[in-house]
Image 1 (tube, helix red, strand yellow):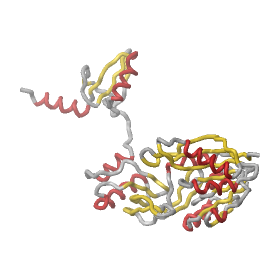
Image 2: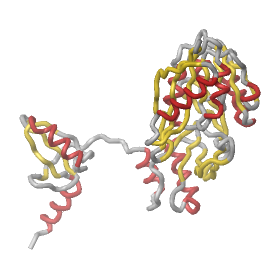
Image 3: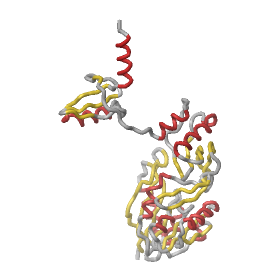
Length: 346
């Protein structure tokens, strides 16, 4: 029969002292990789070296492991852990979110209608947000978001990214944090002597970094959506930019012709507008940044063929400068951008 002190010893050690595996230094890295792969390595205690041996803390007992008292890691709880603790109930909540300005966007989760306010309040407090919404997808020509507000009041926000301010209404305008690298990349282009035409400017997704960080000589920013166009005007003023000429309407009717050193086509599914892009280029040619989606099977040959077909039609020879995956768009579907140089055939 086990005495009370033995029971206390076992309970104490199983709760507060980890199982540890001891290995020689020369075998330590191999063991670490194996433990990590098997998800046995504990992150609650420190890995300790003593002489020629390394002591790895474990999540569970394995052959050869013993109880040894190791120092605890000074680990701060992740935002997700703090959110779960704050809710204090067994509710399935998303472990991924987007924060645009002071607004948090969540995907639908089980029982969101029942627990939406509690979950939204916890996300707002931990992430220091004013508003939390559930995202249900998009609809219509302008891909307007369908959302439900579960906490807070206003869905209008100002998102600051790489020193650029984007004002928008999350309930009316899409803003993808997945495109951040592409927005930063546009801002790194030295466009000081360039005239640029942005055929799908939106609220200024690529126009603003090209104008502010890239210091473009002049940008003609075309936008058809009246709500996005209103925010484009506000963002030009908010960022104190004088090198952007906003143009409201369908780019097929308003885009300048034979003027651009560079054309931005930052909206997907716009193959039919490639002709407008080539007509906007100077007769000497220039660069087109063409965005679209492709399947894993199509790879990038589909977009290359589209560029070459329309380039040929409008008198240009196309050479590919670079290809980049912007983000995953859906299972086996990728949002890709191709930078192409157009030069006159003759």
